Image (cartoon, rainbow, N blue to C red; front, side, top):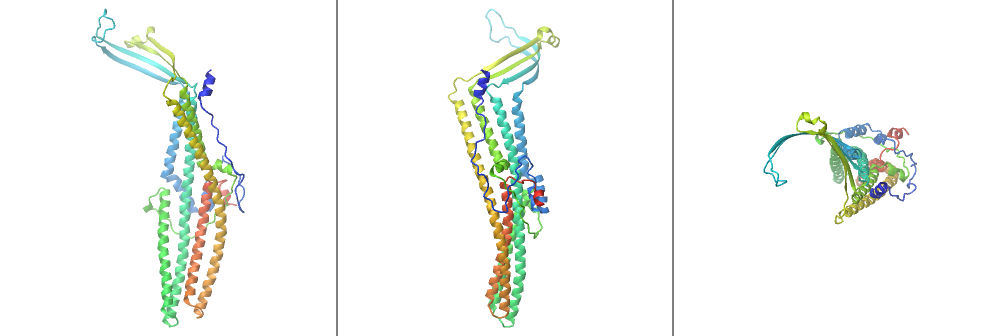
Length: 467
């Protein structure tokens, strides 16, 4: 009967819901299948970009980020809660001592009209050892521990997810900053070219070869480029401040020197979708939330069944200290208490329905997280391939724009074309170079997005960097 009661009361066993998973991603060359290994550490994935400055900032963020410290404290809380709940599996043993001096009034109510009350003052000395234990026939304790364990595992997955988001956000801000450094360098070189062109136009105007319109047009282009420099410097400052906050440093005390360095994304191996589900910490957290919610259904269902408390104590009690050690001073108690609800107005059933609805919500959330993960990985794969082609085309367009500028300048100096052709060629070259710089930055950002979508490093960034 006890076994049958436990089986009925402990609620449904947790089973992860099955999802329809595609066999593989829609990949383009040079993508290849990875070698999944969920037990391996995710590792410092950012080292695959081969940037020492980024490596230093990531280590600083992992050591000083308040956000990561909060997640670590919550993980410690959940593990302590699991230890607290697990203690219910064992008997609770306590030691108690009492030394009380009591005076009883003679004016208290009579226990019998034939007997007179007297005022009594006496001492009560007692020492007892108490033992208590809950017989978990209904499965309440077992399901509570199961739920606490799932919650602790969810907190661990949340910690890994926050760590991944922190490093990805830092890499995103850093690559945005470096992309702006490249753009600012493009503008600096364009300003040098435009100032030389302004000098040429002014010289030809002073010689009477051209009108003042050429000088005014070149000056307008120069002023427009200077305006763009100020806008980009403002954006760079914002990314620099974001990096300071992510690394746990006050923004006024933080700075990163400009650096023009062309970075390329590391090769990111892609596994099948089911492997991604095992790797992504947010998916793992959603799955552990389902397990915790399922355990709560069992806890709520256990209230329908009897609660059995076993307990007892043993000790000695006497009026004086010598009497405490006499044989007649021995006291003890041993027994069991059983409680079972008979009528509660539907309260227990409502609690079960509430827990069941909570479980269904976690199932729906799990499906949502999985579908979002699939979308993010597919977006990253197709996006990175498209950006690769676009960047190559932008480099070709830049080379063509440089040739156009050379031809336009030569024709203008020879008096064949107007200065408007030179202005147009200068603007075209500037736009092409800036577009190439922006696409280079977008490739890096998309690579970070894909690494985040895949749940972090796959087989070690150092291994990827050496390939």
